[in-house]
Amino acid sequence: MDRIVIRGGNRLTGRLPISGAKNAALTLMPCALLTEEPVTLRNLPRLADVDSFGHLLNQLGASTEIEGARPTDFGRVMTIRAGRLTSTEAPYDIVRKMRASILVLGPLVGRAGEAKVSLPGGCAIGNRPIDLHLRALEAMGADIELAAGYVRASAPGGRLPGGRVTFSIVSVGATENAVMAAVTARGGTIIENAAREPEIVDLCNLLLAMGASISGVGTGTLEIEGRDRLHGATYRVMPDRIEAGSYACAAAITGGSVDLVGIKADDMRATIAGLADAGVTVIEKGDVLTIAADGPLRPLTLSTAPFPGFATDMQAQIMAMLCRAAGSSVLTETIFENRYMHVPELARMGADIQVRGRTALVRGVDRLVGAPVMATDLRASMSLIIAGLVAEGETQVSRVYHLDRGYERLEEKLQAVGADIERVGDG
Ligand code: UD1
Image (tube, rainbow, N blue to C red; front, top):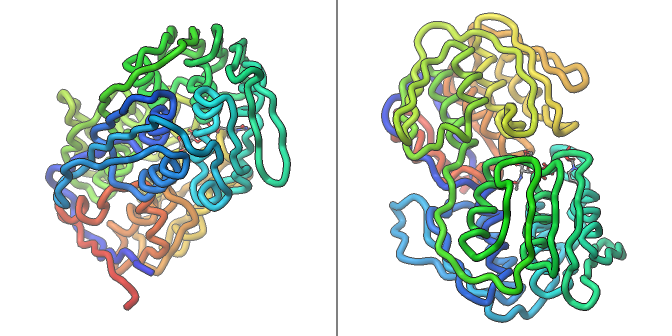
């Protein structure tokens, strides 16, 4: 199995292009199930999760065609055609590998009036139930049955009536499923306490381009009028705010100066504020974010929260950065109950972190030391890369498949800004 090997100590400098957003891609792709016409997505990141989602769409009878990407390009253009669906089932084998497969539930019920999706089960960062997804569909008139590890959702008479959905907790995925189910319902739907993440705005913008009727985009209340038909569209995936934030932490911890190119600063205000509070210089100019750090980093007190709060998907990376701050930081994880799996690995590199319940106390240290490490999820793996960039000696990060799920050509991008990093195989 591949490993990433880093020899720490190089300052990162130069230009680093930001890819299309993984989490946006994974909710834009299933929208293609809602129409017989082609949907073309530009700036789709080259990631294992995007490929897996493509395979899932193929299993349902949709074709996925990738155009003219040279191996040296970042991003791809994919055209998805779901003229006729041949299946409405997302099998266990796919769902267990990629939790986001649950996002075919809403569009399948919307298009075909029925769906059967394997229950995702547990996952490394916590329990992650799907009860909110199911309750939302029920509130729109779906019948839900759970049996033999599958959820079966069906619309009486083949089409959902629509209804009022009030979420008790803000959920990105459940909001996405509810929106995708509502746009072709027979009547109107109101979604209250909807997630406001930029990826949901991206989803709504694609659906609007396909002819949907949605108001309140970007707010906590979405009002949707169901349409009889949606049409095809061509749409550019938003920039990945988490990838950008991750590389910002990488630049900052090395005392470097990096231009992140192709970002949208408004999507990452909480990260920008955190970096600035830590003493990092952040300069915005159009779609370029310049990150420059010299001198010691200051400690932070931060809690994760739904957007526009500090993203849980940035917690591990900022923690790695704060391991080198001059003083003690306090991080609180409020979204997922088990999202500190990077802590013992960072500790093996010399970090001083104590976890009590949902809070981590991070005491800055003068030096981190390279070590063989591994992580059990995507962002946790990235935190080890960030630490490895300043650690003395060699860090080997195994289980690279986690990184391949969410970072497009990570080692190439980091090499280009001066990191001593390479991927090595076991053979
Ligand atoms: C999405 C993102 C993930 C990010 C997370 C929070 C994708 C593919 N993944 O995940 O990267 O970390 O948003 O920003 O976009 N919950 C329930 N019942 C449910 C659904 C969720 O209790 O039915 C809980 C979860 O356990 C969690 C909280 O709600 O505590 C928020 O989770 P949610 O926003 O749904 O995360 P995902 O959509 O799975």
